[in-house]
Image (cartoon, rainbow, N blue to C red):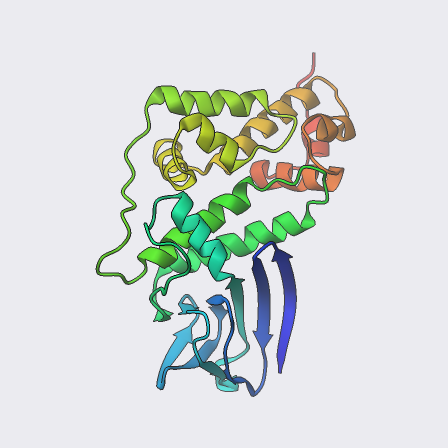
Length: 281
C-alpha cells in the first residue's frame, strides 16, 4: 500500500512524503518534471532504462523529465518512507541561468539514477522542510528566505551531481563591506521576513554566491541568521515585560504558534517560561 502522508505545492514545485507498506509498487510510468527523491527508511528497488538499482535509506534518486521508471518495495525491509520532489524543467533552467550555473537556455538533462550522496540527500530534505514551513505560513508576507535558499542549493547539487565537467560553482569570499551591508539590512528588518533576492542585490552577487559566501563566513544560512536576529530582539522584548502576543506581532510572526515554535526550537525553552524567569530587579 502506498500512502501520501504530506503534500505541498508552491509555484513550479510539488513535494510529497510517501510511505510504502506491505507489498507495494509503482508500475512503469513517467513524469513531465524532474523527480528527485530521498529515501528516509526501508529500501526501494528502482527500474530505470532497463537497469535495476537499490535505494536504501540515506540515498537519493534522480529522474530526468520523461524518463521511464518503476519501483517496488520489499516488505521484509519494513516500511519504506521517502520524500519526492517534482520540479518543473523551466524552474531549474531559470535558477541555473540566474546564478550562472550554465550558459544554455531551457531545460537540460542531469545525471540520473540512485546516488549514495549525503549532500544531495540533505538538500532534498532541506527543501522539503522549507516547503512544509512555507505551506504553514499564512501571513501576508510569507518567509521565503529558507525556501529560496534550499531551492537554489538543490538546483546547484543537481547540475553538479556526478558530472565530469560540473558547472563552475566556485565561490570567492565576499568582502566584509558587502556582508556587513547584508547584515545591516537584516538588522533593520526585524519586523518582517526578508527575501533572498533583496540580500543578493545588496551584495551585488547571485543568490547562490551569497548563500555559499554567507555560510562560509558565518556558519549558517542567511535565513537562519535573520531568524537569530529576530529572536535576540524577542528576548529583549520579553525581558522588558512585553507580552508574547505583542512580541510576536512586533517581529512579524504570523501568529503566536509560529513565534513560540521558532523560539523553542532555537532556545530549548518556551517564550512563556523565558519571560517568567526574568532576572529580578
